[in-house]
Image 1: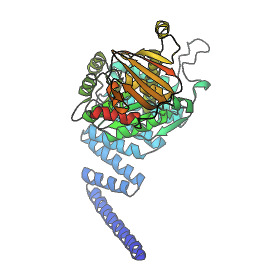
Image 2 (image 1 turned 90 degrees about the vertical axis):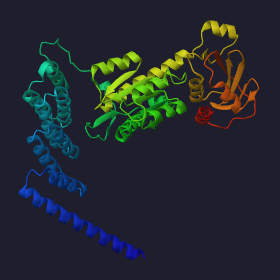
Image 3 (image 1 turned 180 degrees about the vertical axis):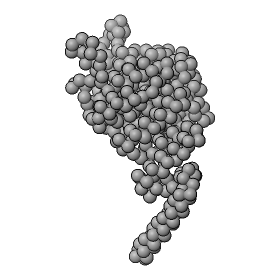
Image 4 (image 1 turned 135 degrees about the vertical axis):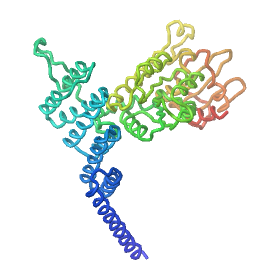
Length: 448
């Protein structure tokens, strides 16, 4: 039976290949008589790509882009040049990007033309072809009102400097000390590949307990953002629309939310507003990641309290560094907020590890910190009544609050937003009554 299956698979493969060959020949004949038949060009390019005939596919997509360019369908021309560019490498990529840059120039889309020009220069510099990069910049047409600014920036990327600078001035942030290992991330359509800095083991350890929620209806964006965040070392939660993003935020209480603006069910702006309605998510940094880069959109977002505003298409290596900055700020903020004041230490009459106010350090965040620090001891919570949570190596063992014991006590304490807290490192002798993880406890609270 196995032999029969193998022979059948081989026959099916040959039949499929014969069909593909016949279809390719049919499309080639059409193009011979109608060189600019866009549908035939598209189908043939797709077949070549399916058959892994990469150069043939590139040729057809370029031909298709040229056909659309001749009939002033600039967006379609750009789309197929980009398709060909994604299949290309090195100098061929640069050549195709130049064609895209020309179309953006011809249609007065100077900002987009500038972004593509940057990609061309980056390719030349990776190939150690600085003269080619310099010649490309010199050949560029005017960028309109921003020409002087853009041209200066392009020259700076190459590393050209004004000879009138003071002796020793390098005009660069890069030095031997700043060079660090990087890893290439696969490019998405419309995005250039990027070398993302690899976090050290020490950095990854610091970020390992932090969670980032990505909310975007584009699976490709989530894929590349997830790859970037894994290199940082933090935990990742993903959602594909605003409603799911809200549910995941309430369930996981992330340390950072990166959200698209244009999404079904609930857009990014609505998600931001809803998150501010809940005390436990109100202070989570929120970054808008969107293709809407208009100045009035950015200003409105910042006015509402958005942490940052990242415009697509983005440079993934830059987003990596920006994400790290926000996460480091979150770590520093947590440490400051839970540091004990001399007055509070005096009133407690003993040395404590952590102390502060629940209004500035929500209990879920505090539990995460104790878990991360693997503390053993007792966390005392004071509002009108006293609650206690017992930890063994960062794991919650037991809790008591009013008449509640165990998990029911934790679920009663978690919603507290007022009062003070103090944690004392000490051995504990209570029996374990709580066996759920912290994530499971948060989930149970949301289900209540």
